[in-house]
Image (cartoon, rainbow, N blue to C red; front, top):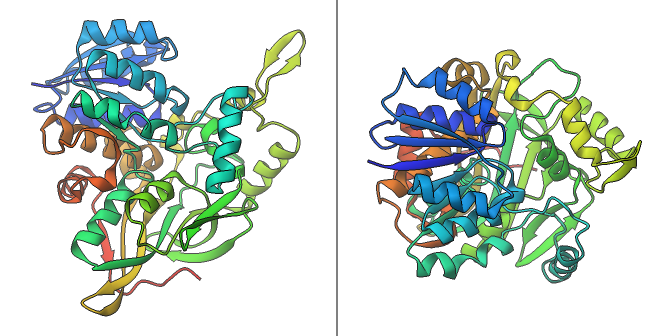
Length: 419
């Protein structure tokens, strides 16, 4: 008998909720808490007659530490799955420590207000010392490692697909395929079409900030920063076809480089169409991607939050999105004294995801790993305490769970390498 609490009720959370309820022998009790309780009530009504999981709903402001502590103490979850905004990672981690709960999220912490003087000072120091300028990084959450270890609690950081499954793929490749890994290219392809002129497949605030930032890759022990979208190639993806890929910074590069210092180069690529890039550049040029509040008709508004209100809700894209995603890692290294290449990846169909859980594949590929990570903690298969990313844990039970619950791996031993 296990009690889990999910914070958030967007696209990713809705997938995780469905998958938890499918595994009601593990997730016997589930609380769904969000700022908008009506969303929680709607999914409870949809699922409560299809599962033995006892579903509870609550209203919560995840920026309110005292409210979080009160909710956690009342519900007494074994694990809190933070599937809301990464802005709130730290405050939810603090509440988990206060209430002795395990913690899980799907993306690295980043601040909502990048103009905060204290944060900005630390940020500038990190840019100078490490060499990458993305607003998101693991340093703030890694500072919680000792706190969680002392309480015997797990804080599982970035348990989505990328980050998340990609790090498990690295651990799997090192365990089973290589004596030494030299290079990794992480490829994230979304071959889906939702029919809108412009929309983002996950939260616009996070998606647009990530894509418009400087790119970065790790090579020979150093970070190398590049102008946004300035390194670009093409790749032919299984199940999707040829797509344009662009080098971005992504948080799993940071943790992989830390935990596998022998790797010489790590890069991350994502696919984008010309229309998406044109729209994004235009919005950036007119200031709509800014997080700095402006005065408008006597009120303070944040441009990117206003834009978010105008764009389609990513959770609404499911019924109209067709096509597939393909996300994975291409490795080059040494096995038994010989050079070797290896590609491990997943192909996920948008319409099949929607038929199963009512969400498109971007949400599906993040929500399923979140459920699998929580399951392994609740079943005490993963037990190492601390604030850790997935590559420190045994990858086999996680990959097996993904195979079983909707994201089966595919493998190639002669992949085309990224140019």
